[in-house]
Length: 509
Image (cartoon, rainbow, N blue to C red; front, side, top):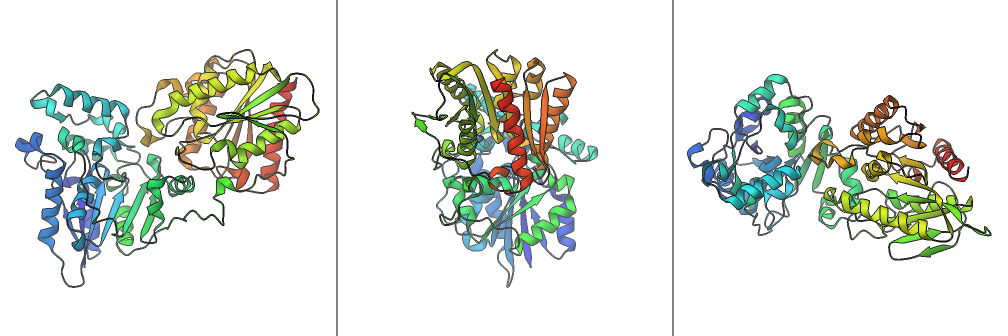
């Protein structure tokens, strides 16, 4: 028989698992929902003294109380913050644990506190300020959120109103030390099978994880181990409240070793973003500087218009090749050069969600350098953004300079996803587009886009239409995110030609 040990996240207690536990029990499993010290009514008088080690000990105690019956297995399930005491306990009782399930959570690392996984930068700052002040009483805990504050910890999509009311009513302040104390691991649990349950409504998906693996993120390469499986639920961050039955079924499958397995990076078979561009473009002269490449038209004299292609992200700093050498970027740059326009690719520093400001600085600096080049017509420049660089369009939409002749975006993320936390208002294109005026805009929309990304595009388009923006939408009905190297179809090729044709007309008019 399988015993599920369920550990909830910040501010919460065993009550969040009531529905899931009932369904697991009816399926023949044993269930233990852990009461972490100081949370969910488990000893509030000592709650402010609890730290991460306290909560690890709570989980270890439950593991020890279960033991390992003949033919039985223990499956640890950690949601949100709960994955930190789960991994800590598994490290101390690796011989007793059959599997760890990461439920819409991060990947805890040795020496890293749980605070690093908190999605909202404002909350992280609040915790650090409270810790620095060292105020007794309320200063040693993070107050539980009000009913409307749970969104800062993850999407509440699909959670019934009554369940959200109960979640709020039973919430407890979170002891700061549980978030600030570094997790200490010996590595004993590293070999345990694991399953990741991702909540698409919170902005996470198997495709996104696979894409990050493909980019060479070192910390994610172990996720391609055959003992690691993945599941995806079409709901927000609280599936135990919004999709109880689906979560129970998923946990049973995870315990049985089922699920999707990621594809390892294989040098013999390029990752999707490194496959050839869908159009055969001629070689053109390329001039490389530190972070920027210029693809130059041949046999063309005098200053020429230019288009700067801005890659998406976040991209790990160690990714090789770097984005300016990715086939999509080089393919578009050669296309531009073949039509008498200088194509520009660059590497900017969008390595994490907190890097948008410095990435914006990099793009602005590249544009200044391009316009200063005597081979470029400084009054005729276009910008083309891809994927996760979508938020960077806001700066240019809000107050377009006279020399910006067109702005394009392919399958962009045009608003923060739910698991991004609060996001700098500077990088909200739907707000900025009201200042775009007559600037020509081209948006290439992938028909098979992830729902969460597609929603940000629709939000932006609705705002653009309300303010009468000059926007052309190019649809690729059967196209995926990154279709230029994935979908070698006539429809995809037509979309590239149409988008490039519009941009080139505005540049050369």
